[in-house]
Image 1 (cartoon, protein in one colour):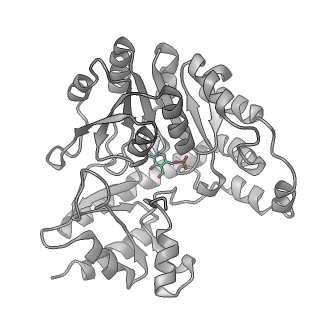
Image 2 (tube, helix red, strand yellow; image 1 turned 60 degrees about the horizontal axis):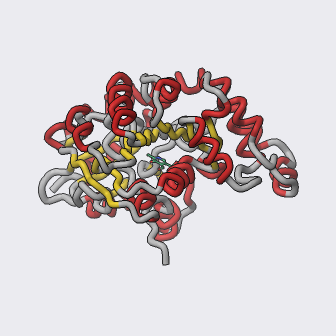
Image 3 (tube, protein in one colour; image 1 turned 135 degrees about the vertical axis):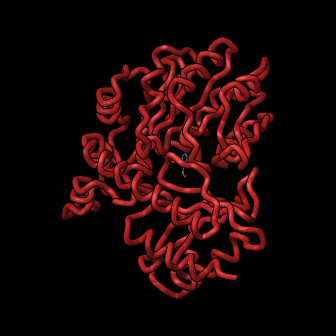
Length: 360
Ligand SMILES: Cc1ncc(COP(=O)(O)O)c(C=O)c1O
C-alpha cells in the first residue's frame, strides 16, 4: 500500500477523540487563516451549483483559466499550463525531464524526492542547519549544481522552515542553472503570504526556469485541486500535451478565475499573517520554544531537550488542538514541530494551552 505522508491529520484526530472535525483547532495544515475569499464562498454556496457541475463535463481544456492566469501574471499563454494541483505539476515535470540527478535542499517538502525517485533520479541533498535559521545560501547551493545535475529544486518560501530566498538571488540561481543546462524548479505554493514578488516575472529571461504556483494555500481551497506551471514554451507545450482532457473540474476553474481578482483579500491576509507570526514568534520564544525565522504562514519550532513532538502533540490534542510533528521530514528530528499562523484569538488559545502543555 502507498505510504501516506500528509493530511488526514484532522480526520484521524477527530475520530480518535470522537468529536466532529470542526471542533479541532487545526494548526497542522497551513491554509489561509481567513479561509476562501467571500466571492469564492458565494460561488460554492450557489444553489444547485454542485449538482450542475457534477453532472456536466468541465471544459475539455482550461483555456479560459489559462488566459486569466496569463493576463494576471503578464506572461504569454504559451509559457503557462494550468494543472490539477501544483503537486501534479511537480510529478509531471519530473516525468517529462527524467533527470538522472536532482539536487534539493533539506529539509523541504517531501514530494520532490518522491517525484524524483518515481523516475529513478539520484538525489543529491544539500543540508541547511538550525544554527543558520535553515537559510539557503545562494553561493553554497549554486556550487551543488555541477555538470550531471539536470534538475535543481527550490521551495520558496520553503516548507517547513519558512525561509524565503530573495528574488534577486533566485534570479542569480536561475542564471547559473541556465549556464549549466540544469532546470531550476521553483515551488511558490506559499509565495502569496510573503511581500515578495513571484519568480513568474523572471521566466521570460531564463531558458531553464520553471515556476509552480498553487491556489490551495493562499485561497484555502485544497479540495478544488488547481495549480499552474510557468516556464519555457517548449517544455510548457509538452506539459499541455501530457495533461489529459477534463483534468480540472469546472467548479475549480470558475473559483480560481474569481480568486485571481481577489488581490485585496491577499493584502489583508498578508497583513494578518505578518502581525500574528511576529507575535507568535515572540511569545513562543518566551515559552522556551525556539522558532525558526519564517516569511510564510507557518513556524517551525525546535522543542526543548526532553520534549518530543509526539508528546506535545498528544498533550495538545486533549485540548482539541492539532500540530504537525516533523519527525518524518528528512533533515529534522522528533524535536521539531510546525504550527500554522491562524487568527489572533486562535493563536492566543494555542499560546495559553502551550503554557500548560510545556510545563515539566
Ligand atoms: C511546498 C508545497 N508545494 C505544493 C504543495 C501542494 O499544493 P497543491 O495542493 O497545489 O498540489 C504543498 C502542499 O502541502 C506544499 O507544501
